[in-house]
Length: 76
Image (cartoon, rainbow, N blue to C red; front, side):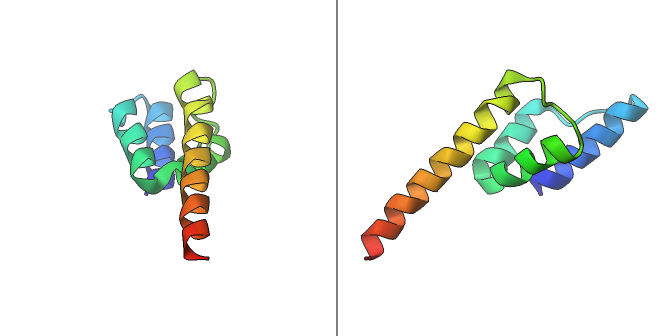
């Protein structure tokens, strides 16, 4: 969903239409869409210069991986 939001926002930006608020994009990343948002950033070349997106989304993905890795260690 976050990937799609990034594509829609880029299309709207090109047309000068109403945009999806950055807050909504970040919230979609926080609720599990960080990988999709990151992929969308670079595929659509959108928001790649914003530090919040350029740095914050990879950090969020790293936190998900670390949290998931710790969860996996508890299984074994």
